[in-house]
Image 1 (cartoon, rainbow, N blue to C red):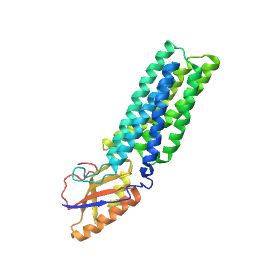
Image 2 (cartoon, helix red, strand yellow):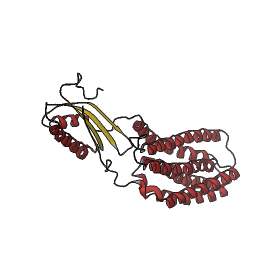
Image 3 (tube, helix red, strand yellow):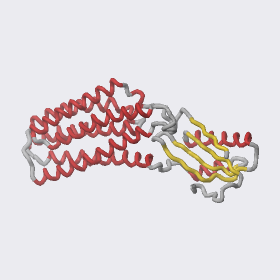
Image 4 (cartoon, rainbow, N blue to C red):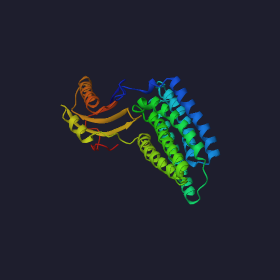
Length: 307
């Protein structure tokens, strides 16, 4: 059995990593969110606003989410070892999955509570609601601006960024709701804002959850497998490529393994074919890690995906 392992430091286009997330940036974002959470819990209880309390719940999860994201990022930086031969990059995907799942649960619970408020409205102090919502909006806006750049590079940071973005929109809604309650006295605005915010968060969090579950379940990345088969089998001496497996460690790192049915040849010649296939897969398909096994009429099944 001839196997060829190649580890590439480029990691499928990780040109901008979350390494720019300094300890200072995380500290300020966490502190801001902790402050908003306390202010909105007190403000929500005193004013009777469910929208403020929903904002507070999201902010509480934000504080935990951002700390978890950073912790996961630090774990993911650890080098491969005998216990984790694939490294620790999945820590970020686990963090993203947990964060997004918590958001889904919170959104559903808040919508249930909002429906109860529609049925039996409760009195709300509009002035207090407006003041606290404005403070929350300003703090959330700062946090979103701090994390926006990093959210494009990592599902892990995106999950935390979604918490913050949701809370920014939430604060706008709560502020508008407070003004409407103050001017027109329409209490149903409060649960309506809560439902609107929750639906938006539910949609975004579901997208992150779906992607992370795919990665954790080792679903195949979106490669053009028909084209890969055609391109590889066009290489001289390659009769067939089969037993293909492709999976992702995180959203940027694709692993690919396959068996190759080759003409009988010297091992040194096989190495040249490996090099051609690696170059093809890395440059044309963004594959990061490749394992190939050469055979000469060894496998009974030549099906592309059969193990």
